[in-house]
Length: 285
Image (tube, rainbow, N blue to C red; front, side, top):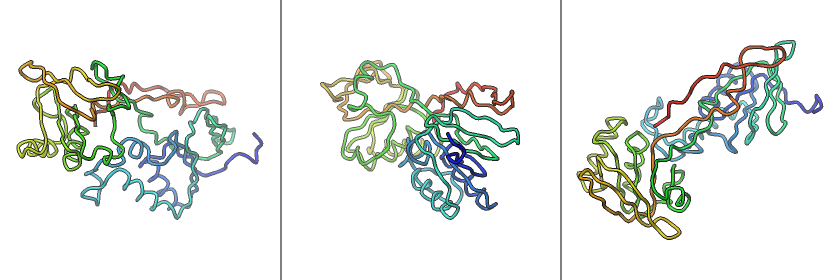
């Protein structure tokens, strides 16, 4: 690539999630130009890709805001600083010039020359933890969903969720006003999620607005071409069958560092070497 084709900026930010976007704002206040790279085809990181409609309760100044609304607000906040983006691209190589500046190269051969590199990639990309349930893979995309991007797709449907963390609780609460019938299945009798959310779920169950099955496990899925039924083993070891249009197992996400593990923060010759970190702990929120 010719030198004139290289993008020159003050700061290159890897990751277009909330942290990366707010870094653009802080840099903009200092009159520093930013170029943002993300492997996803749109800004927003995990919030836009996995939880766009999930309500968030711990953002200062907001009693409640959903994931995409937060991203939209951040984009509005940084618009005056005119950041540039390379979306759908993955950083492959980071090298340091003799003057201390950095050259970033992506898998699409985009090159960005910058003075400062900010890595805001979180734990990398994420994959859903898939429970060992008969015929689960068969019904992926045909009734089995690991994330909820558009809750309206579940309007008036019969939904079975499984899990005991924040995601399972939050989506049970949210879908109670949308789906025709909501059942939450949890293998324990207490929840790992926020106590306030757990209290709301118990209240919905006592009011008859959801079906709550504790000390129970989903053991099999049934249907012809698409999901029709979910088989559950309840607390008495009795097998019961529920009609279901969708089954949503929410057992957390497993982070995958990907190329981040091969980047570096220390200099070895003209390349950058990184000490890898074990991020094997699963994320369940």
